[in-house]
Image (cartoon, rainbow, N blue to C red; front, side):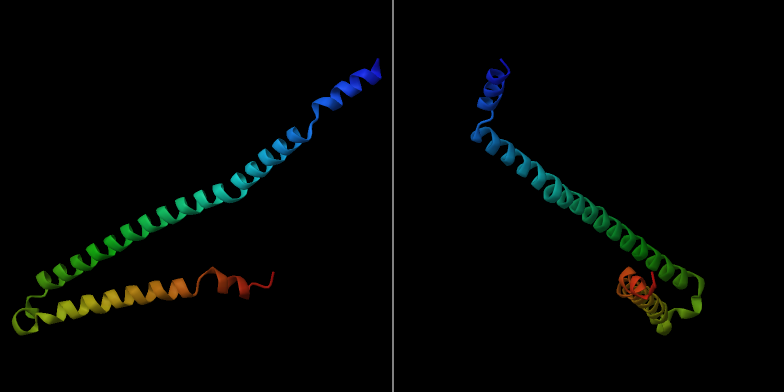
Length: 117
């Protein structure tokens, strides 16, 4: 009796079923290891780009605010000296841009290289 049930079990295991299982396993692996990380990366890039745009817009508003502050508070800078507040704001913007570029260039990769772990 046991021999007959064993043969019955073996007949159900066909090569086609094994190939289907391998195909399903490979597809599941591809989805887990490639598609999902790409979706996560896309989400990370989208939120990072949105955040960068909002921070840039905020800096732009702060620079306009600084310009208006300089123009309103220092009436001496009217007339022929009206270009000085613009120069001050451009220098301030250049400092902000240079600090941003410096932070990007000296990112975590260089700090990791210096850590003796």
